[in-house]
Length: 92
Image (cartoon, rainbow, N blue to C red):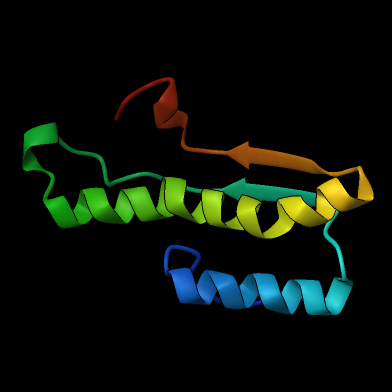
């Protein structure tokens, strides 16, 4: 099953979580894969780009974990795998 939505938008993320839990009752494995801000010089990036990066990199992952972790804890099993940009090791 595919559920479309923008994970950086809180209400869309909530709807994705609700739909997934209504369909599957619990999630065993959550994999997140996000990218960061566009490459460029720090001083050239606009606040909107930083806000988008925050929503994509952190807020989306925290929201998904908050949505699915309770079920994992209740069933006493689950895995969360967070994949992020290679820029964590090698800034672009």
